[in-house]
Length: 276
Length: 211
Image (cartoon, rainbow over all chains, first blue to last red; front, side):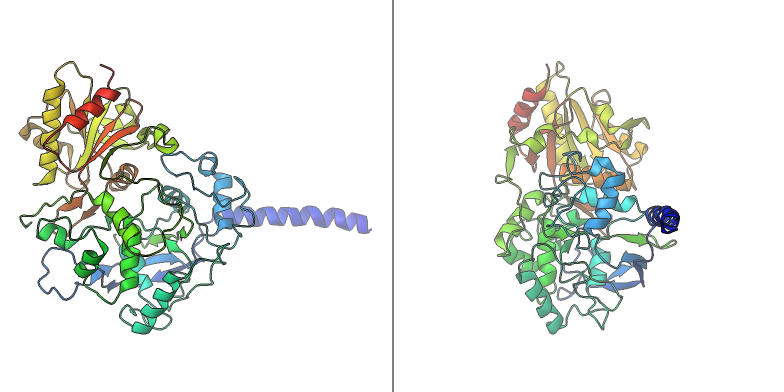
């Protein structure tokens, strides 16, 4: 009797699990995305054209889009490299990843104790992050998209000039990232319902390599103005937003192949009808 | 309109390293071992750069004659390459002029191909690239201007380490970099900015050229 039952239940369970796995692999995971309404934000740097008022940057418009609630986790990235062997640590092309790629994982398909399945994946290059997202019909957020959403705290959409909010960001940026990286969801969850833009790991942006171009570098014909911290901060419109300057500097330091232990990523999807 | 300054901001690539090291923020590990970023021969012993071929980026391209290519089709001969856009009025022209100077120095015996990748998929049609090539007197047998989709330009710029930003006035601020790439697609030399003196580039080409 029990033997018979077990014989029936176990295959049924296995089948159900297989179906669940197939479903979760084949369907784009939109449930974990949040729609961000269109709006505008104030970038750190002035763009050089048509700006007369030197005290302030013009706000930049951002179309509505959907953004992942959490950064991509080790578990999610593991499922990706299972399906895409060319992105496993031992097989990824050196043009697209540096030697640190997934170096905290125990093996190609074994994240191990330094990479808990529910923690954000780090040590991933820009190329690897985009390959993961493209497989889901997503892409990295632009700097504009990321900064626009990241200006929000728990209660207001634009807290970028709130001294208390900026102080919290400064204290996060000053702290050492615990190892292993804490689980996704342990950072700040803002009023859009999007978690961990602050308080966990840094994140890749699609056009990270646009950072560094300042109005001053064109305006006075000197490239020096934007190249050093002091002069860079002086060129910034928003003197109080040191955290935004740190993000700008960090992006400036990256190359697309770098894999860094404090840098993860999340996806966005542009909504139909809303151009980039 | 643009001011008298350089539209195409040179030497941006090295600026990031300066910013990152000068700001007092603990550097995220591991930092690249790139210490001399000014103008350097990429270290031959570096296992990353040693065997990383840009041809691993398999992207479709269209040239100034409307002919279709894949990036890997450029293999088999060394090339000197840069990323520019043809409506650029400043440093792109100086880069092109510098490459023409090198072309003259190399003479007819060289197998080196001259490649300009467009940063401007919106405006650099085959016709626009052909107009640019004719206006600059570029030998169509030797020079190839190549455009790709916006996304593929993004990937190519990422592979080469070219930083760029489209600006509201239609200009594209970008790093001025010149690359010497061998027949297998490996970047063997990178020059930051435009020089009056092409000797280093000519020397690097001599080391990768078969002739």
